[in-house]
Image 1 (tube, one colour):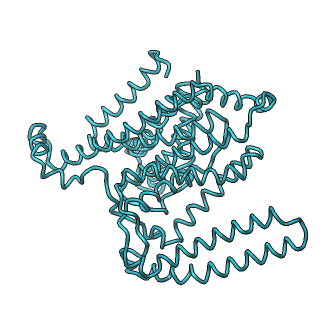
Image 2 (cartoon, rainbow, N blue to C red):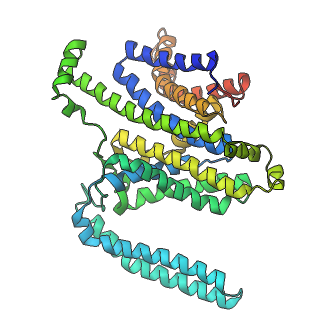
Image 3 (cartoon, rainbow, N blue to C red):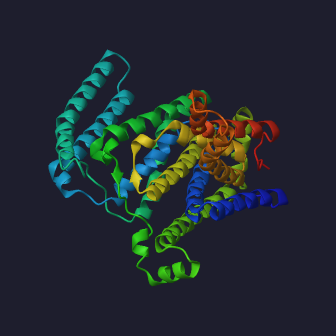
Length: 433
């Protein structure tokens, strides 16, 4: 970050806003906003790598964050032995048949000469593979989902520490990005947008419908935490002493201590990421990426493999989004595929990058904080304003309509904030150097 008074002032104002929330509203609310702002900043950092460094238009952020969240279930949840006995190995065998079928089809396509023989062989392999997959996979899945569907009905995870799920979530998202990038990055940029949008919807559909994987729309709750539960912290003598000293209730003090623990972990991750991102951006590799972004034709003429470089940064940025998605599910303590919506997990992250300043890592971080703060605070503020405006109005449809419209203040504010930034500071609050 450019060390100048303006940038420091912007972060200072953001800190003051959080401090005012803690004083005027609730310390718990301020810490909740802080934790989600840290996660939002990480997601914005991932999108900034793709768009700010390389000009890649990714509108599938939702899918990559969802894959990261899925990793938390697969890594941290304890396995369900009954489900594994009922159909775990049949499911894995069915999946292996599916992978083997695809590999056999690709090998046939490459090795056989074009013609009717290749087409017939390809169809025969695909049909046989599909039939075998269904034969083993479907009964196994039915058996798994029949195992106590009210509480389990899925295979569970590996039972490892939940923090290990964060890098695994990044790897899952990177793998999905690699598949999308290999297909679409050699084409025009609008194909990338279509491909990422499509794969994100496919990921969400799979997570909703494949209950054997993570309970689908029945959700997985009570995920392991990297910090103790507030109820456990209440028994700690030092927490009781702290509550007495501050004059707070024991429950509030324990909750704040737990949130501070999350904030410390998230700050550590964000600090490490931004250090790495700044090193990369200011290295010869970062300058090459920006040169490719500004003029692909010239970069190709200089001998740069533009498609390969695009794939690299696309995978890296998606991995960071997956990491943020895993952290968010850990903070929530549950995986709910129904909550993944493009508005929240794609549009809002893009607003963060644009408002903060694309091409600048610190700008993306600031955008994550500012936009999430507005996202949380605007709706109650809009309700308060509408109550003032309608205070003198008689009860009726108009007053009801105005009061109900406060719920839409979030979307209106996001649009207005983006328009104001584009009008008066088109390069964002902290522009690229």
